[in-house]
Length: 219
Image (cartoon, rainbow, N blue to C red):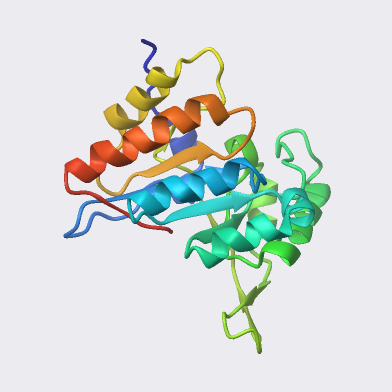
């Protein structure tokens, strides 16, 4: 079994990102899902979450929201939070700053969220600086008006590595339960690449923490 420890270097390099939620009186895990929505995989994730009365946050790729708007609406109607994950899953280290910002803006014109997670956790300081100066138009749920907000840039406490085919499904499950505790932000993926590992680990993670008195909230 291969156990992967959380990357402390990234956390030191990007201290302004949200890595962990505060501990509260009720033990809480914050599940997140990147790279969707996917018309077959995301609904399965929603079904599993519903079994445990769990809420999560879905960091969506703008192009996938454009292709699968009905699936995106399913996520919101189920009471989950949504966040932006760029338009085409751009790597911030390999993308020009202006192009990266344009990708985030284009994605959020469809997603309307104040939550953003950089793909791969890779983002240049110049990109961070520019994103923090922008105002993003958000739906205020009444559908009659909008409001402007700054993005909150979210990382993770534990990444499941469900997309890593060098890991077994059991490895992924063990990585999460050995590293996540109260206030942890856990990153899964509702994508084809991660499907086999994720669909095995997710219900087991939910069962493990439910039996230990945890609840699951969105960001």
